Amino acid sequence: MNQTVNILDDLIGFASVSRDPNRMLIDYVADKLASHGVNPVIIPDESGKKANLYAVTGPNIDGGVMLSGHTDVVPIDGQNWTKPAFTCTHEDGKYYGRGTADMKGFVASSIASFIDATHLELTSPLHLALSYDEEIGCIGVHSLIDMMGKSKYKPAFCIVGEPTEMGLATGHKGKTAIRADCQGREGHSALAPMAMNALHLACDLVSEIRQMQAELALHGQKDDDYNVPYTTMHVGRIEGGIQLNIVPNAAFIDFEIRNLAEDDPIALLASLKERITPIIQAAKKTAPEADIQFTITNTYPGLNTPKEAEIVSFMKLLTGNNSTIKMAFGTEGGLFSRNLGIPTVVCGPGSMDQGHKPDEFVSAEQLAQCDNMLAALNQRLVKGI
Image (cartoon, rainbow, N blue to C red; front, side):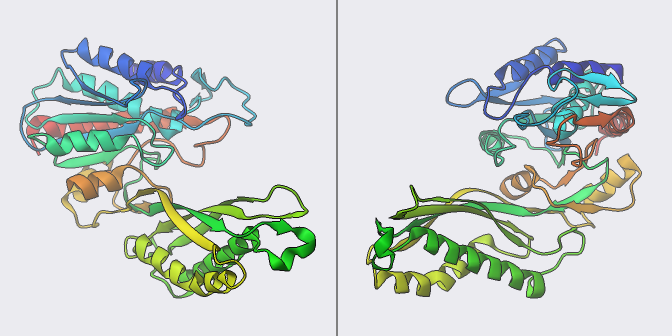
């Protein structure tokens, strides 16, 4: 446990907010692994200031288990912290600091477990995958997945250590983020009916999104394992206009679809386009240039590992949990499952109730449970899986 806490202390000291480099943290991990005879693969971005890390210990064969975590954290801007955000504070059986729950607690435990594994006679390999820019849409992990896709060997299972209070999560929703650019025609507000207000087009679009959401809630696919058991559509931003006496010629909205595995976000977007066609056609009668164009700005798939999958029974033995859960928030697990075909679950210390908030923490009890799970994993890898 002390090794995990010492590593967590160091990790929290790296202010690896997504907008900033994470390379110092990655180099720290690489040096630590190298001191135990492992030379990890570092996959930098174009700037060289951010990077993924991938390491393997044990035999060079297919199989084994991959521990996956992201190294970036969300900003602290505008939050009222009472403890230093980028120093790990030990207090009342808790470890405070940005990223302790989401998800440097798991990353610290994984590094400690990996180091322990280097001194064991593993029959199946242990893989460690650390990524960047997860918090802004699972962006950084793609280069790591590309590398793994070309690798001769790949793990049999993947554990993504997002905070689940050590519950065993077999699924989460997918997410598609979309920008809608609304084109109108400018004019003097005194002659507003002769122009085409782009903000009005945007509001008409929002109205259709809200109507689709209501229909999904009433008649759409349901999965009661989620606290919100249906696919959601949410508008997060709207912008347009310069000043009150000018009819705006442009506006945009940013919205998202968080979909159940049974729903196709591209099909939902196509349905939305069909629904707004009459709105655009009516606008073109006043301004032929009027239009609404959609751009998908980011997307990642959901995760829907069958409850009867081998990895689920394997994890139940490691954790002692007999039940499974599903999560509203997304992870990189869906990408490992879809792109690489690796059966994946999510299980990690801490709660997302603390994530992204001031005075974020993970409890010592949760971190100890994670250490125990990974110690049990190492023993399984010694026997072979």
